[in-house]
Image 1 (cartoon, rainbow, N blue to C red):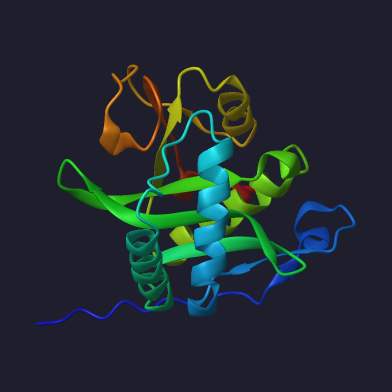
Image 2: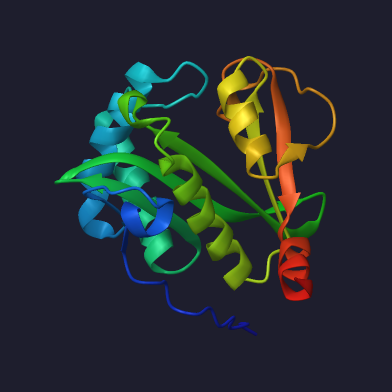
Length: 199
């Protein structure tokens, strides 16, 4: 038997001015299949710039196939991929999906990356907000992700957004997507909704 889960449609694309409060000509929007090549170019650029993340871009054909499969899953509602677009170029993205941890299916995780020259402008917070909205619409309770121990800037960023370390430092491994030892950070999202309702 197939179970159908209703998820509200994605909100319309918003300019960063509407999301982050700053005047900008960038756009935050859900990714679509037409973004495959642009997202591949972004991942290749991020692979050169990233100090703390692993981007497997050696086989460009495989990267395009993998990215297209991820976008197909996003279009089908199985994951959320949101992009920041600057006049035809993608400058950042977040890829959020549900995950099962120790048999529990109420978790979601994400990968977030922004080109170096666009960091520090509130764009990351806008992307995280989009991921949190995606998670809430699916009734998931907890958002968890990996942050490299040496990535002080990201650690401080996520702490400002209300995320905390969940457990001990984990030894480096390729599957984490992070270079070096890392923290698992997370936040319970339903608690946020309860606090908002009480306010």
